[in-house]
Image (tube, rainbow, N blue to C red; front, top):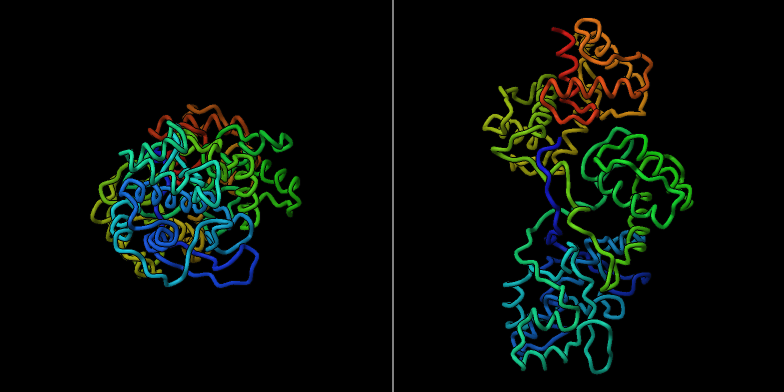
Amino acid sequence: MEIRASVIYPTIPTEIVVHLGAPGEAARNVSIPFIDYIKNVASNEIYPTWPDSAIEANILAQISFALNRIYNEWYPSRGYSFDITSLPAYDQAFVEDKEVFDTISKKVDEIFNNYIYREGQIQPLYALYCDGRVTTCDGLSQWGSVELARQNKTPLEILQYYYGDDVRIFEDAPTGELIGAYPGFPQELGNAGDKVRTIQRELNRISNNYPAIPKIPNENGVFGVYTEAAVKKFQEVFNLKVTGIVDYATWYKIKYVYNAVKRVNDIYSEGITEEEAITSYGNELEYSDTGLGVRVLHYVLGVISFFDQDLPSLELNGVFNDNTKEMVINFQRKYDLPTTGIVDGTTWNKLIKVYRNTIANIPDEYAKYSDELFPGRVLAIGMSGDDVKTIQKFLLTICRKFGNIPGVRVTGIFDDLMEKSVMKIQSISDEPVNGVISPITWYNIVEYSKR
């Protein structure tokens, strides 16, 4: 699925869930558009008569504070079902249905998708602030910002005065899905994607503080045996059921511990670097995209549509073209997804679920071809099972016919020799040479064995 490496910067959520009370208090949760939340907070925290630079600096701090809570899943990682509270003792002042000031509303409209970050990091700054008169803190002084604005300081200069010279403003952040959030289903052996890479990255950082947790040697987004071993040890260390599967509870326990060792609720946090946030699988696939990700999409769509007469089976190539878009839209329509023609995370997840269900229920007349179909999980060194044995048989056929791969032992265990043979096939087929069997590698091995 690797289409292009990119850095996943924080996105602006369309909505934020606010708890109208203290974290453990029995109070209502309200979901409100993020832009309206910021207008509400700003109208509670600052005055519309302040100089424009002070208003903008304070709003940027409020945006960044909220985004830091969301980006790091601060409350969900503690077992709560909201993003932030309404109380300034814990977060920021929010009053449901409060009337907002027109001056502040217009300023938020201009900058609601900007936030503060520290140079060399990508996460929104934990922009701690206080009024500067009744209370003081290590962050921004609200009344102090007014005095600086009257000295003709710009919003950035005000923010740098309080948070440091390495503070920057990220402008025009996109609105979109939070990449780091729980994907909606457990991650386990054979899964692949940026959710897996998030797990790998966070476990490897946690292991610096908890060395009993083994390092995952390659943060490649493939849930293999090394990732499973790290997950099991993490579960053991933190008194979770030891399954090696990252379910909801394990996901948020990982997030909780990761936040703790990273000190994400600190204005001088260790932070997330661009290098840590590089993804291998990309955000989504859309019209005109090319590469391995599109080939995987076409493979999955082709198999599903072959066995489902409700979905048209159209000619596909290595480009996300009109036919691809039509097939995606038809799939989205059938499964009640937004008919965008874009393969985002939600559509990917549904495609994989439908694909796995399809190959698990192949009609009897096609049963003899079932071994030729990708089994629904990515295979990598150390893994075992009937699907490993199946592809080993195809590799053995190639070895006997052509003698141009190192060889294979049909044991059902993905060993070093098998990995070398897979890498050889990948080099011949112009694929990324990583020794991991994705749908396209599986397809190429099967087709090569038929020559």
